[in-house]
Image (spheres, helix red, strand yellow):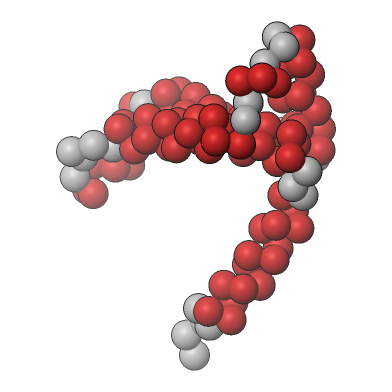
Length: 107
């Protein structure tokens, strides 16, 4: 489904969900940033104390929990970008361009 939906459509889904619950007052830039870090930490917690050799097994066994944390993280990214006018495609392209200069491919 990733190939079937545009980022703007995802932003709208998140916006409509939040507006139906009147959550704007809870979604300040700081609070959304905190939410993103919290969800990222919950993803990290799944791998806490897991040996590198066991990571693939954890992904298989905890796939649903991992998907939930990725979705929660994406929710906060989309909400922040939509609420405060960031174009994620442009942002990513610009950052990749900076990183190409900063980290040139090995030759």
